[in-house]
Length: 177
Image 1 (cartoon, rainbow, N blue to C red):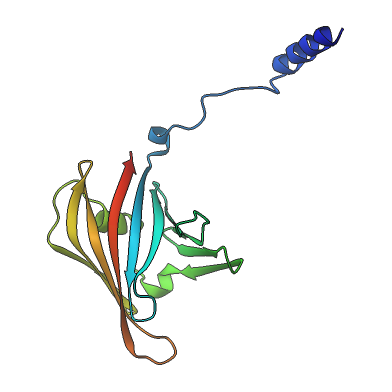
Image 2 (cartoon, rainbow, N blue to C red; image 1 turned 180 degrees about the vertical axis):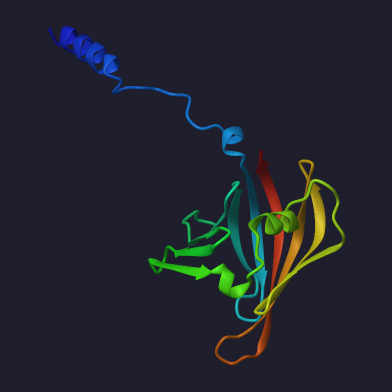
């Protein structure tokens, strides 16, 4: 009797599309790719800090996530043409920054071109606005894509106005295209 009930309910639910199994999303249909890397931070306050990172490049956004060796996600940053969304997981805090206030000429596709190139770029690529200067250097070829190994961010401290510098050293592990 129990077998008959199981078979009956399986036929009923599968016929009603409750158990609909579809093809899902493919990476090619989303036009995205992911970069996995270990990032070392070289700054005065946090020298030697290492995190694992994942960067997903989508058509309309870039999503960066960072986690220490244990794999717990510390933060997630989503960059779009209009805003930067910052999700700080440990502090359970969500922030957003209006990009147009920082840089009225900002375009996401230009940022993607600075970070990822199919052709070997110049030795140093620079992005700048009134609040910061970012230099991308030491490009390496990984899976037919050129990526920077070193990113340096020059900015002024909001409270003191004293200039400071953060340098990110990036070791790429895997690229999913």
